[in-house]
Length: 468
Image (cartoon, rainbow, N blue to C red; front, side, top):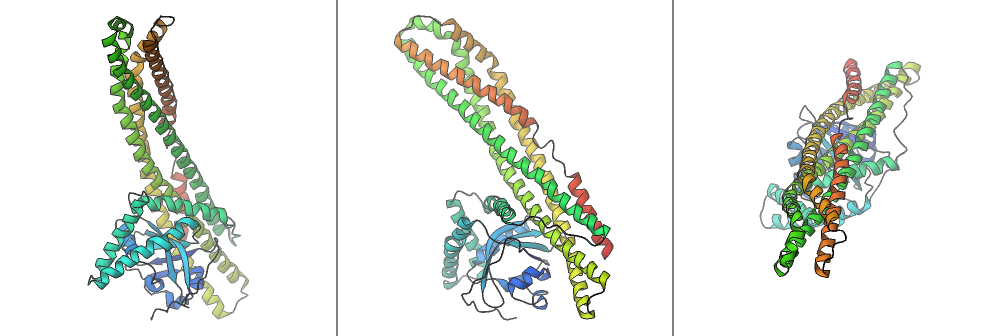
């Protein structure tokens, strides 16, 4: 099929219009929903069996699709801002997610892009820059595949300039953001009025999945707040310890000039020595929290993608419900009945793919939650070490503070004692806060379960299998 020539026209759609399609492992379209058909301006017969790149817009760099295939072939979902070309030559922008399926195929869901700043950055700066670089490579004799690979590297370089270490880190930020914006702009999860008790059960299962994912998303927000609190507390502790090192150097100078002060400041020597050891454990906490943050971002993306897939599910339940209603009333002509039945068959195939994607997403969430708990355990162990190591030195330091109350010290020694007091009290406060945070660390992921989510998906999958 010849590709249309871009007309310069542009069309948009609403947050509740969601594109859905599945392809085989070569990218050939197997299923497409009515939204895709309508807004791509192709007939169902033209889309089904066609390569998905039938809608590729020439303004999209090949590097973006190279990055997509690299991610998918690694078994991970992919998300990006994409400009597509409709059959009538007009363009439309989508936020696209693509998920590998167990059979080697792929499930793609596209929504209206709602983060205007990032969308505009992609289409007005990042993609044009990469496309220009690819054109230069092609003009210099490089093959299309080579230009695509270099284009993907160009994309990553631009993202690194925006403080993203990888494309995966970038998509883990934009995916949850776009899904949340879509949910806020949407009229909400559809309420389908099924025409049979069985479909009512299926509809309830879909809504149950959506509610269950709420708990996971709430937990990820709490985990993010916890990691930020631990990071802030560790930073304060570290600052107090570094301040203690400064005091130690000043103390050495003071004792050299005033030997009579050696006895007065001797008790805090242990505190100063142990504070250096503690720095190693604050480093461990910070490293663990950074790892936890990355894992949390992955989980938020997994949950957001599962919510999107669940949202699409309910629309297919509606299509099947409408078919059952039409067949029950027998109020449609034979041709129309055949078309409606065919639509129901596509809806069931789509539900099967969505169930597969959800199970994969739930498995990823389980693995990520285990990782959270392991990382949280490491952070808790580091906190315990800090508390244990500093328990005796802190007690000695507090006793020292009590012992010099009222002592007549010269101004320089008094200033030094005040600096010590500030460091000791600041360290006390930071350690106390870390102990409180450790109780929250111990509960990370403990209340999360995927049993109900899996049961609900199994209910839907079993029903779909019965319809074959």
